[in-house]
Image 1: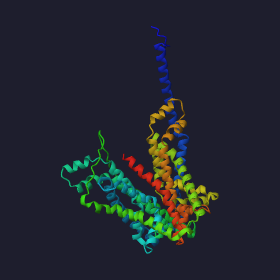
Image 2 (image 1 turned 135 degrees about the vertical axis):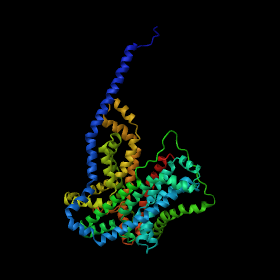
Image 3 (image 1 turned 90 degrees about the vertical axis):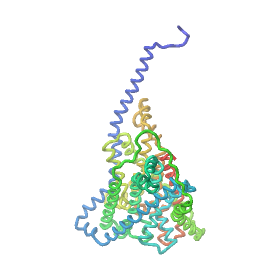
Image 4 (image 1 turned 180 degrees about the vertical axis):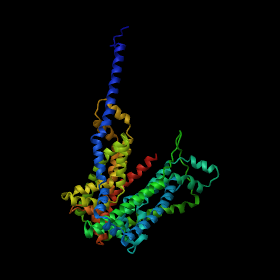
Length: 541
């Protein structure tokens, strides 16, 4: 029957549908072939180039050791001074890391598993010390107690500066744990304490190992904190040697020993972490954990977060405020402060963006084309990211002086140092963001005839932009608080917030340094808040 509507023969319609499906399959097949070839072209070349650049400091250490010769190297390494530095380093790590573990686990349990009043606020305050640079913490404590120095001071200030690196992963893990195992252990008569130590603590092992590694690597790399409290470490000795003999063999050999210490920490963390797995198998979702009632112990338990907040945040803010008041209007040299803020902001922004661009090919390969090459490139960047900034800066100084002198003490070299130092931060953020982009969307875009490059730009990068922005912010935070590499590589006339603060505090002008310390904290607080929010969001809270 003809009802006046335009019709199409069924055979013709079916033919067009089949033709369209075939065309889409052909486009997708072409995309898959192109994607297999594409990573082997420019994106793989870019990833290999970035990884080779990242391996430059490590290759520099090996090259210098070979060039120096065994006799000279052994004479510089096996001497009493190196033994003293090694003892200081071992004692610092042995005391600080366990204290950070105990404080972080206790604080994480109180904020995530108990009915502690204001738990959400205390959780944020436990992360907030990351906004205070370690050398500002040291400045605050030295201002408060000028006689504070040595190992005790190093352990105290280091703990207050770095315990959030352990608190964050431990708290996030506690939020994700399924209480079913704890209920099963309690049902067979185990006390709450035994349930915690025999059931919960083993599931925290990965978080504890990862956080402890971060704390340990920061202890090895830190410079300003230990100079202020007069506690010698490998980093302080390397900078002293560099400033006194400029590019001398002693500084290079000390950097080699420091690199070996870093690798020892990496190996120890890998050994302690093991290959155990703690994952829920089967259907269902973990339910919320009932919070323990503190009862009459609530006020005693409040002492821990309150004391940590007072020591890690109260002392720096009160010290900065006291020096701002004591200095009066004279310390607010507006033009100099604005110039320092502008230089810091530009360096942080440029370094963050370039680090994200450098991480892009490696992150894309690791997610979309997993394999031996991708794992090798990604692992190499994480390994080099563990090297202290002083080693990276010393390598770039030597390379530019001997091979590319026009690049010595230029912004190009300084930005390159920032990218190499903080590339792992960008890589972690970008890799997680790309992994969350459904590959089906890329397939749909490819089926419409778009090239792989357009798919990457229009789909992958657009959807992963929030994570990329967070990575840029994390890199920028590191650059704002970076001191050692900036001092060694910055062109003449450069004056970042960290450099200005360090120059004035070195002259015992604590009042003049206070505005720069304040601005460093103010610039760092939003990024620290972002890190805290992302940590809770990743656990579904």
